[in-house]
Length: 166
Image 1 (cartoon, one colour):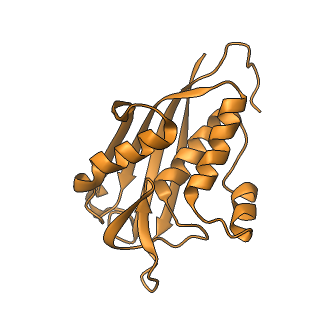
Image 2 (cartoon, rainbow, N blue to C red):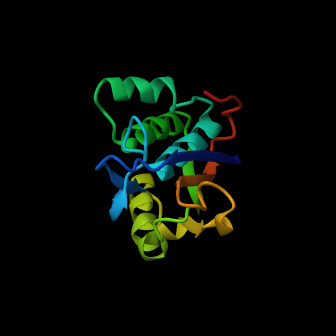
Image 3 (cartoon, helix red, strand yellow):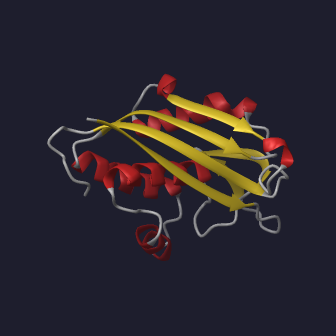
């Protein structure tokens, strides 16, 4: 069975902090990080939420909060929890597509490396990872450079007999 799910996440920039900006598991040099208990990787958070839409178990929230309290703030840990749920259900990711709204950073030079990083994490070909970016013409706080918003559409394959979410 093929199923699709959408995930979303957004964070504002944390101007007073020296935290690095991390997107798709990569440090984006020369940019301020995002306000979050974790590393603030909005791409991985949106992806984690999309996987939760397939498995039915929300990772961002109590699970992620417990990981943060234990000192684990790398968003890969949240994504890994979601991937474990998907694997337990016998599922696998076929394709993922991200749409980023942000005035900064300019993502075009980073897109190939981010796609490769996400593909490596998901163990899928980079051609199965889409990434587009827009400033939204400055109509929102994200388009005005106050933060970053990410929408993620995930296509996954589950065994036919998995009639219920986790």
